[in-house]
Image 1 (cartoon, helix red, strand yellow):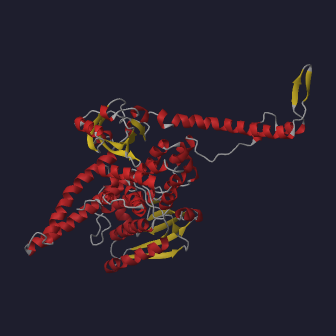
Image 2 (cartoon, one colour; image 1 turned 135 degrees about the horizontal axis):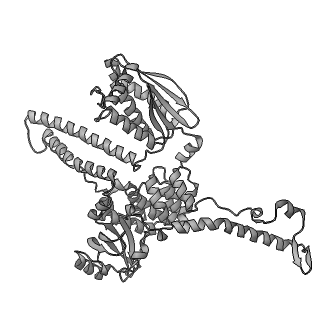
Image 3 (tube, rainbow, N blue to C red; image 1 turned 135 degrees about the vertical axis):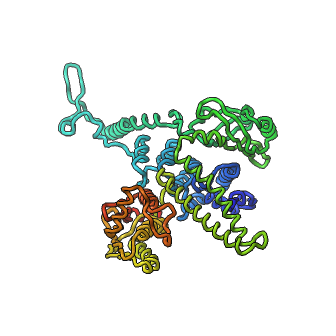
Length: 555
């Protein structure tokens, strides 16, 4: 079992100069850019966020932008992305280019972004229809002045065919032609008015969807709030739609079990660490929270400016807010199961390696077997967790470039050592030369191995799987033709509800063929593709890497 103390190690490094500041800024970005389920929450994460903000004020914007535009940079933390989006335009733009969020995270983050930052998202072409619809509803699109002819009430043929008319006493007479300079100004005015008329509905929709005007949904309760205070300890900024309900609140007014300690810390301008406080008011805020904050000082005189901190919803309140999410409950169960399994594995390895003293060979052999079984159980937990995250949209497969034909050929060669001994075969047919797919090579390798190994493991002696690779305009397909006997066994297993028994000498998963195929289908879907069975044929369809997608991948 390993304890991840990398953040604490980075924070312990003293800032002795600009070079160390840039290095620490880069290290904190790498660590804080992890997905929220991997990064977690706590005082160390909060302190790292505060330190990142301090470093941002010391490092020029151009250098921060260059760091964010490095090819290996990938931001999967919506909290971090929200902070970077509020910085200089170049930094915000670079952070969006390096972002890698799920659809659910984009849908929650975009309405809370500043309007200026939202506009930077209009050039992205990899958003899902749901995210694109949200941007359209908020009026985020390429804009320009409308054509002046669109705002004219006189038909084009009449406007060009006769002079403008003016009303005079006794009838209608032609109006004198305006000077050239007046006509030009009039055209500009009409263009501006036409633009305003076209923009009005979008502005109304944007105001309607603004976080400050929208009532937060009960299933999207905020789990953390970042804030700053003035020198008197009153909150003057909050990075959440609940800002109007909190701005002006004094830290001294917060109640809780540790209120006396909080009062002393504020009065003496000491750091506030993991204090238990209670918020009242709106249902979205009411309840127990944990408070962390650091004092801010400015200038050589060290003038106290206030606090910068974070409020984190108490775990009991957070768990009750998420109690209705079945996927979250499943992940909690898996987390609870991992803990004793890890403890058993560690104890077995201690005995097997004689770390605490000599042990009989019989005990060492038994401990080695237990450690191996526990490792297999933990691998099964990882597969369950991966399936839950894929099917709920929390996990997305990384994009990249991969030659599917070459990868399948390499996988078939790796399987030959096992298939040759059992008398089963995989026959690889002719493949299209251009079979590049828009998927990371490691993710594609895992998916192809999972699918081929599970199906060939279910084949009997003498049976052959025929595999071909085909390319189309927008996708690439791996087609697996099964032997009739295997198709019959699969159909019988589906009809009677019993899992199909497969040889254990080739392991593609510990939960059986049905679970493995379901996991492979979830991976294909998360990659923007599809896994389907049509009679005696399995088809794995993945998006093809077009020249435009290749350019986007290298950005």
